Length: 309
Image 1 (tube, rainbow, N blue to C red):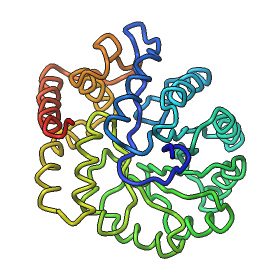
Image 2 (cartoon, one colour):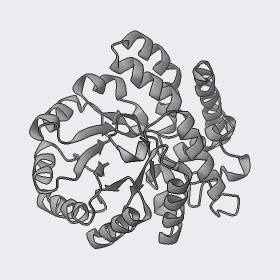
Image 3 (cartoon, rainbow, N blue to C red):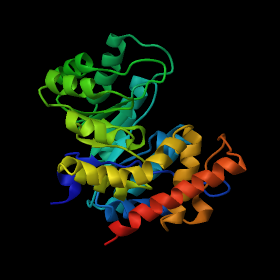
Image 4 (cartoon, rainbow, N blue to C red):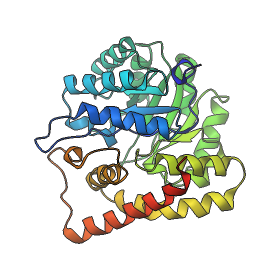
């Protein structure tokens, strides 16, 4: 059975970055190389083009190209979650339907947080996109301006849309919310933790089904997940503490994360240096910041070496 024929999410679901050349054109061979690395990391699914893919800097045609490349490269070995972000419900629904026709295994989208929306407006937005496809749907809520959706939202939408299966949330101290969502939806909706996987160990006891970090440390985080979910918390912490400083440092600024994520993939031999650029506009780190980030990247690589087959 291929990974895509049974897209039940569990464990690490990395975000595939968009490799840009110096002229900011997309290296589609680099996308394929990232898929191969994800397969080697033994994850069950990948997602693109999301925030960590710089989706907001891509044209509609480029989004189609990276999703199509990922589906072809995956070849059924790993499920492909096609992110269908757009602040318009109509446009997001059209994107989702197009990704379904292309052969994606799951559909995801982020709730638009450009301006304030009422709870009813958020439910309506999500319902319209879920009803546009038959595939399982993952909804991301990253809301820097306030609270993310919670158990009432999850229950209402799950009652109306059977294909709403997963919710990705990115906030600290959300253990009670995870438990309430599971209870409100009678386990129909699984919660995944975002924000680089920073909170994975404190949320495993609450019942998260996985985490959605960057790709560069996916194998290390997959092992942390395996140890943590099998009750080997000390071993999980020992491994996790080797990469946690890199997560904390890079996620101070999303554009810094993008730069160092690609540098990490270069160091690990996944991407060529010529395809490790970030599309403009971006935040350019000073020399000290970049050097410290590269130092922390090397520690991630060192943590991954004992895990190599």
